[in-house]
Amino acid sequence: MRCERWPVDPERPDPRTLERAGAWLRAGALVGFPTETVYGLGAAAGDTAAVARIYAVKGRPADNPLIVHVADPSWLGRVATAVPQPARLLADTFWPGPLTLVVPGRDATVAVRVPAHPVALALIAAADRPVAAPSANRSGRPSPTQAEHVLEDLGEGIDLVLDAGPTPLGVESTVVDATERPLRLLRPGGLARGDIEAVLGETLLPPDPRRPARSPGQRHRHYAPRAPLELFEPGQADQLLRAAWRLAPERRVGVLLAEPRPLPPQVVVEVLGPRADPVAWARALFGALRRLDAQGVEVILAEGPDPVGVGEAVWDRLRRARARGGEDRA
Ligand code: TXA
Ligand code: MG
Image (cartoon, rainbow, N blue to C red; front, side):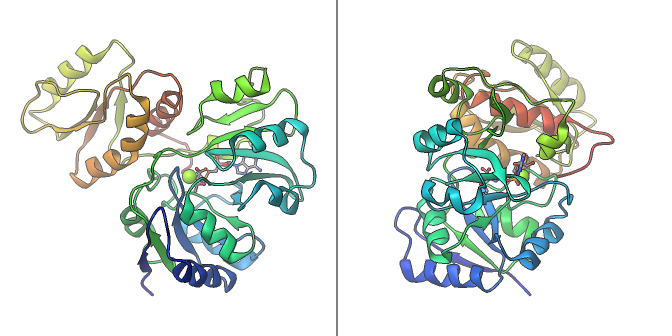
């Protein structure tokens, strides 16, 4: 069965279309939908059969739980068994927005967020229940920032995708563990760490390498193009160019750059934005990795933006895209 694709206006989605999509979720369908970060693959959170199908179509490891999406902070009590005070503060400050809070839940913990996208909010409201949704990519692939990417990876296994065009932020939400104090950053994302720390008045702890089960997704290989990716730290742009000139005669080379540079004509170039504009990098990164794959490049040479604000998330994704070898895919 082939997936349906319904176009929707990103700002003012047609209520009848969204009502129908909400009814599909209630009936057990898997629905791809845009959020402000990336496209998600949604199922009604309480529908165990539909949630199991999400894991199957994505090829997602069973130990990696899903984020539950709710329409309003007042729904937090429907999925959490307790709401620690700092979680309440962050929810009140940043929701709707690209922040996922891990709080106590029936399954020990649960990750929750209110997405800041009119289509996502209307869909959850129409479904009238919390919606479990991972990013709508095959496990291990770059996250989808367009409906086309969802169809590319999952078109054969899901029921519907709501196509509202490209997602505004382009990287996933920031995940914060609020079950213990101090709070811990589990995944940098679309909301800058500094904005969260300013509201809390304290520093977030980094992920705990001794307890990877606290952030299961971080154990797995992610965001990966098919070609091996070599990452050049800030200040190494000249090394990147030399490597491109050296490799280009023999191999199909792709590059991710902050600005256009003199390169052999056969090199596939993706210019993602000035180093000082990490927001532009975040928006363009996953699409560029997919385009390089589509061009059949054999190696990717990448620089990155300034590692400030959302630049921290871009560097995290580039590092994970580089990781190779024994890791799982998620
Ligand atoms: O922006 C986003 O967060 C997107 C959109 C669709 O909302 N969703 C997304 O979901 O990126 P996913 O499944 O690709 O990543 C969810 C991350 C994973 O790293 C997972 O391990 C972590 O959240 N996570 C989920 N539940 C958790 C929990 N109870 N404790 C700790 N980490 C959790
Ligand atoms: Mg994901």
